[in-house]
Image (cartoon, rainbow, N blue to C red; front, side, top):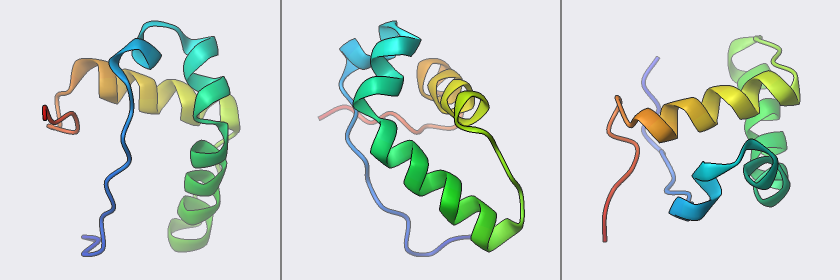
Amino acid sequence: MKRENTQIHPVLKSELKSLSVFKKREAEYIKSLQETIKKESGIIFDIEELSELLLSAWRSNDFGVIKSR
């Protein structure tokens, strides 16, 4: 299912260096994303695994999620 209303969420490069810093600074966004995924897909991620998944995707940038200004 393709989402047409994809929103941009800015993340600082420095946040990608540490999981604990990332989770602390992005806690509200991760919680919101967790609720959206559960509502739209019925998939339940715990905060820890969703945090690690996001951080991994953003660090590797395999999906082109990081854009330069």
